[in-house]
Length: 286
Image 1 (cartoon, one colour):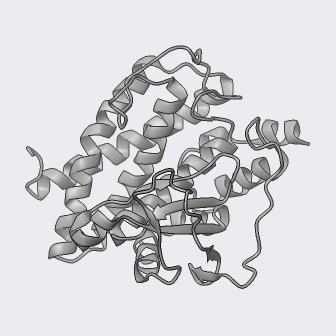
Image 2 (cartoon, helix red, strand yellow):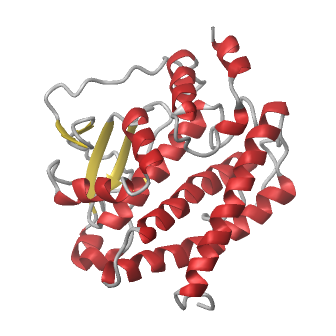
């Protein structure tokens, strides 16, 4: 069954959220029928089961475990924190991504970062994580609504790429670089990383950058718009560097040629539009 699903995938349509939901449908088929070395059991969406919800009741907000974010500095937050709904409203400015989020993600575990909480809306960030063995769930700090919206799509993109067969350290398909090879990550600058990890960073943050553009397009002049431009100014340069690193060094199988080719075309469009917005709003030389 799984091999038949793989053969039927149109990999060119899997890179970018599709308006007809094709890539979401195929991602769920792979997750529900495939598993992986770290997630051997097929995915089954968890029921709401009395939990708090958001995204029109489609996604549960469950009490976060103390150690879910791997640092004692972050603490479980209220499941009814107002920024959860606010972050979802920002994500909804990109309808295709919002529709994909509510189908691929069944649970959010909210945390608070005391430092970000003190900064409030000027914090402009969210710490987030998701585990390969827990498809459908993400952990994220909720202290900043814009940052949380980014975290939603960032972790969703990681989950999607894992379902397609690409983990951080190795790949079942699509990416063919030797896991021992090391390259410069656009996000993690402390050490060189396998191409699978570099691609994960690039894939997830191109989604974030695209969301920045959708949020910007529906923003009004004022503080929110300036904050979104600041986020865009943070992401466009490092995604451009990542684009060049991937273009120079990635190796693929046959399916990967179609998937990565489509992703790079989409990335180029996102980066060109992002730079144009930065130039038009006086952020071009920052």
